[in-house]
Length: 248
Image (tube, rainbow, N blue to C red):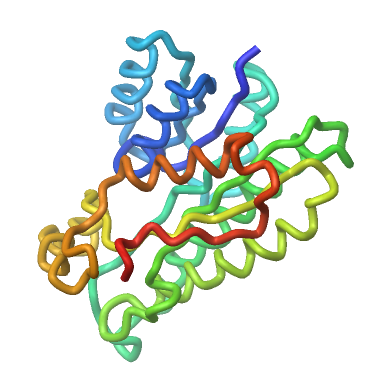
């Protein structure tokens, strides 16, 4: 029986690349999406075309009821998950803190922090030996922004990813003796669609000169690290936060 991974926000970018790589590594994949069903279905189609097992499942991770329904649907259709990738996240247009509305802040933290924590909660209930599970692995997507602060642009986004770093370390220590490893990947400037959603579609290329490796990274390069942290090759690694930022 194939191990089963749930990847949130897997219809595009890093999530989609991780879904495709996980399928090639032998995982059955639950491809979560919030709104873009066509993109999620295309990821599923590609996985099935290469002989893999996949299912698209809709849920807005900011809505607890939808998260619970998603996990119940996966339980019924594919079985108990053995891995979770908390990839769903949002960024907003660049602005200073004094211009940030409460609505913006709530959206950032509801998606990037609370959504990840609720999904991790449900994963622990299924994977922990304390709850009758067989163990598993969780990988959270953070950002190099957590270490840089993103002054003048996305301080709220950076702060939400700083919270993810802390959550990763805390949860890792909490469930370390229950068969679950919890790690994070901290991407730097990655050439994905998220920059367009923040109003700066050319941002990755514009920042290339400020990156020690002189180029943005790719979603595939982040996915490679995520899969390493899910795999047995990292069996003694938990509470780690791995930078994939080209030295930035």
